[in-house]
Length: 122
Length: 122
Image (cartoon, rainbow over all chains, first blue to last red; front, side):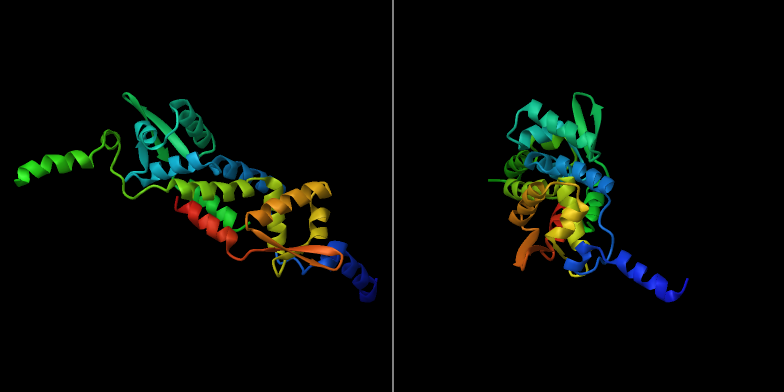
């Protein structure tokens, strides 16, 4: 096989009809499985009350807040706050520890920064 | 009024019942209005198809993609893709330009990085 026989095949495979409309791809786009995982993380965060909970927790000097801090600062019922806390624990942004009367919630170190980093590079 | 008369008042105002359970606040938490705005942006992004659309657009050399690129790469109906594109345009992540037969979508420069930055600092 000569070079001229290979060249047309290479050219045709490199130019799909879609590529002909736009500029060439500079990199590959996000994989479908990665998009699914990122969307799940973002969904857990895309609620004003959950963002405020994370912010109140991370605003404390040791990034841990008693559940009583949250009920004090959010004008939401206890069951609603508990639901939001469960979503954030399940999504890997908070951990829970029970000490005495109260539950304490801590920010998982790097969890927010990790999602933000993946999002910025989408 | 003496110093000893002022001191107890100052101490009491500085320690709410909530503060007594947790470490002190190192900074203020996100304002409710800012949490609302960030949640709206994250909601627009928290869908696998929308993340893939943004990624396909930004993967192109000039961060612009023909709508035909998207229909080629996503296994979704044209109306579904149009719905996702509208959500992303309305949320300020994409802009749309019509040239000839096709619509072209461009990434709004800095829009993803801005949301990622706010999220990382929540």
